[in-house]
Amino acid sequence: MLKGGKVGLRARHEEDIPVLRTELYDDVVNAARAESGPWRPITPGAKDPRLTGDNEEQGSVPFSVVELAGGTLVGTATLWGIDTHNRSAHIGLGLLPSRRGQGYGTDVVATLCHYGFVVRGLRRLQIETLADNAAMLRAAERNGFVREGVLRSSAWVMGEFLDEVLLGLLATEWER
Ligand SMILES: CC(C)(COP(=O)(O)OP(=O)(O)OC[C@H]1O[C@@H](n2cnc3c(N)ncnc32)[C@H](O)[C@@H]1OP(=O)(O)O)[C@@H](O)C(=O)NCCC(=O)NCCS
Image (cartoon, rainbow, N blue to C red; front, side, top):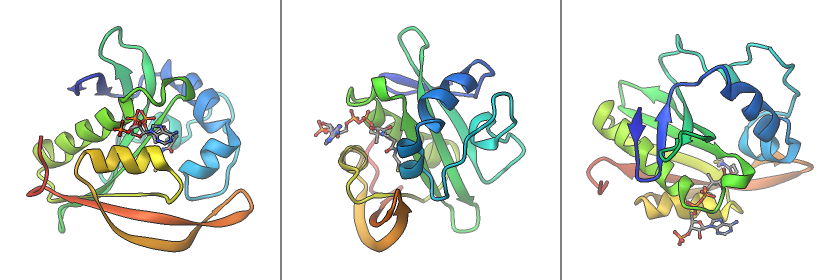
């Protein structure tokens, strides 16, 4: 398990799946904002890679996020789009609604940076988030990510096109 200050990042366990499906993916607004594709329901028991994680997929590493104190599941985190030629990857995360706003997101980003830069030897990490996602923007910037651009009207979300912000962090800029 990777350990941050408050959270741990571990493999996806079978018992995580119904919680994540109910709390994150069955919530149409949350899922529509967090994913780049259209919302679709996930059948209980289905081997959907969004829930199960694909251990064979080398370009993506799915984690479950747990509280270090007690081990309770609080969300998901992913290092995805891993490019071993350009040594870059993207970060994605989602916390259960009851666990937001307690500093966990900032800690997850820090722990994913450790995984990307130290464990995987990457040089650049990137985050794309909706321009109105103040908590994600702040959690990224608290970890040293800088805004590199705005992708205008790039996301179709619940009936409207929204801007996305692109943030990047280089290994040379990162402060552990
Ligand atoms: C985005 C998310 C991961 C952030 O994690 P979090 O644990 O809620 O964020 P934190 O508690 O670490 O807060 C980070 C900063 O944002 C601020 N913040 C938190 N919630 C906020 C809100 N609703 N509005 C404005 N600012 C907020 C905090 O005060 C903190 O700022 P500070 O460091 O100056 O005190 C989490 O809210 C979440 O899972 N949201 C739904 C899914 C999602 O949007 N995922 C990202 C897709 S790219």
